[in-house]
Image 1 (cartoon, helix red, strand yellow):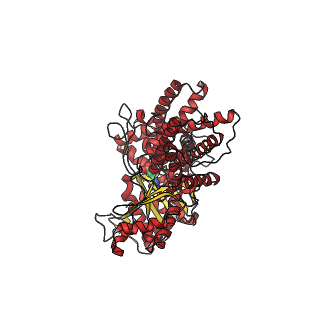
Image 2 (cartoon, helix red, strand yellow):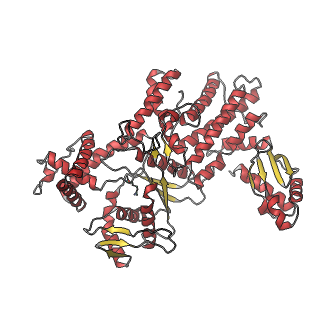
Image 3 (tube, protein in one colour):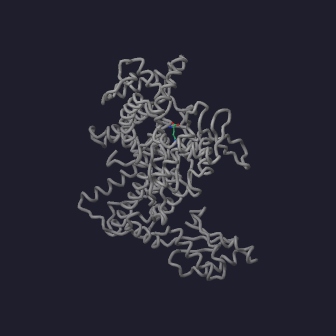
Length: 587
Ligand code: ARG
């Protein structure tokens, strides 16, 4: 379906044309005086120069053409030449009824769907998940759902950090603790054990211990680096340990992401790119893109128009080791080969922007990706504590994701128990569901590129611009609809033209859904979706407080209200699904 704004614009174009003016002038916008009218058109002002006429004359002529338009209750030319447009309530109601009948609530799918890969999450295997990884997961998941909702073929890839120095550290520490294991015996010929030589909690302890120890002991550090080198060059025993580390951590990661309703289509990682590195390096050398600089193999990516210096892309260190640039380039080689995407979107901390500028330029310049492949970096800001500094535990350590989630859940649990609307046995589950909304909405309601303050008290509040407030509104609608159904009511009415201001505001807000989705999609801006549902929730609550819904005596009118509530609920539920969370039945 077209958006209502598009429909009105077409109507206005006709009117400009009929009055003898260029139809391109007929741009309609939301009114900046919503007390006077819903939409406005300033085209007559723009046309004044071109036609050497007073703008009010043009406006008057256009308004005359609109006299019989079914779209407007009134179209008024006001000095010096604005056109104020008031929608006909029948048109709004009709639009809403069409939306309700459409399986996508009126949202049109992309006519030329794109194949998109979203690289998000990016946790480092065997290192604890911390709050920094939370943002990538939350934002990436929402963007994935939004782009998919518009009909594109989207694949989410977690892109694990599974090939780095942390692996060498774990191997070294394991060797120190259990030298008798067969993995360290170079002459071992048999089958390695199927069971991992550690549990997840041991693994979680091994990494930080080894990492701290290596900082103090050079020989240990050297050994870990060498172990990393051996692993990357295919030493069998270390490969076997690596597989154990992967199995144990991926199982744990899956649990964590499931708790966050974050769902990856691909669980690939840096290790998968390794196989593509030798040929890629060969190609870069052969075609003359790469050259040696102080022993390292690099590709220049600076451009004449650069305002600041962009250093070369690093392909190989002087000892022949691959780097972060190398892995990301080789991953693009793999993605081109296996998926042939139209676009690859990276949702990563904005402090990594330079790295992606280098990688994108190098990939384009060397033909690793096709000229038309879109490479997009979506950098997000830092999540800070109330003191404005990166989020820490009370003791000042790095906050682990699990602990942060637990803190929110406990807070939600207390509030839900206080409300006494949920049975005790359901309260934990409900707290988790509402807690997730608190975290995700708290994050997504800020523009992604900006830093924001993670404020547990504010995010968990049932009032104000918060996830719980949005859920509370949905629960309120659900309970009205449920009550009606329990008394034998059937929702089979149609939405009727608005009769008062609160109803009108609510209806106009629901009408905007289609338009909002298009903007959110074009600008990849989930925060605009949050702003929209906050407005919608406010308009609904105002309507709810001013209107007798179930007590309405006029049966047709009551059914009209219930149809409107049903649609508002569908819109809200669709939006929160696109943000990555759900609403409970009660809270
Ligand atoms: N593992 C990386 C980190 O924790 C993030 C990976 C981002 N994605 C990528 N393709 N480089 O910093």
